Image (cartoon, rainbow, N blue to C red; front, top):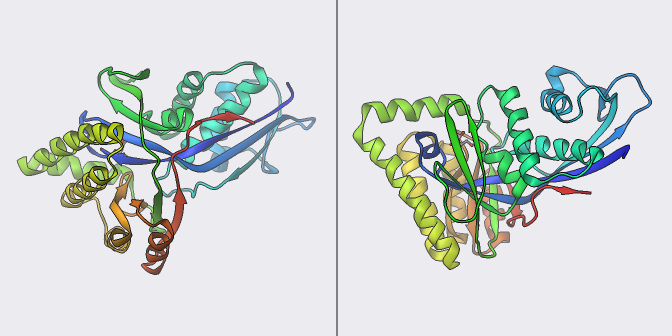
Length: 312
Ligand code: MEV
């Protein structure tokens, strides 16, 4: 094949951010917000991304994806489009990487979600120096995904790197309407992780909150399987309380969460916090979106993507 395209979804963490760094589980959902990449063997003498020569500064993920999934097979024309807001905590770099890796692999033959997830994780790891496979596995598999140290039922694949081990599982889930609220501010993930680590070293109360978030993840799995939306909302609210007490929320996030709650079953920050985005399990998506926008956020309505990465 001399050309191919693929699309991959963005994601939100529903339960367990930060606690997952301490070995607790986490639940992520793929969202109906997509990144799309098209690749074509080019007659030119260099690879171009959206018409510009590919360089490390602007195109690190593309460059690494091409290196790992295409090699030295010759220059390409890469074109992209996206409805995943970038730098918002919604997994846009993972969606970009998964879509690009899948398009490149599709030109060379058959591919599986697992194969794409593994290569995309290596690409993110090479670019970021540190990454968990949560985002790339969710963008590859779609649906709802449970990440844990050990294997449970509906196990998909296990990723090991640098002494860490992540077992990725598929989860059952009910139809859900989410509204994402983006603060417009980017949180510093490394700094926020460090803040939680220091809090846990100094304070048994912080360690107890991490353990409780781990328990919320397990309760959340049960509530998803039972299609118990009311309990899911309560668990989201409780999870937010612990994240806030751990110091990773922000006034902007709190304002959007407070605005969303009257129209939602539950709401919390999603991802590292300190800015970035919040997620609400909406009762009324339209009213929830309007309230978030009035409070200064950018709102996106989304459901759970059911397909993961798709070759177009
Ligand atoms: C960031 O999206 C989520 C964290 O738990 C970090 C991680 O899992 O790599 C804060």
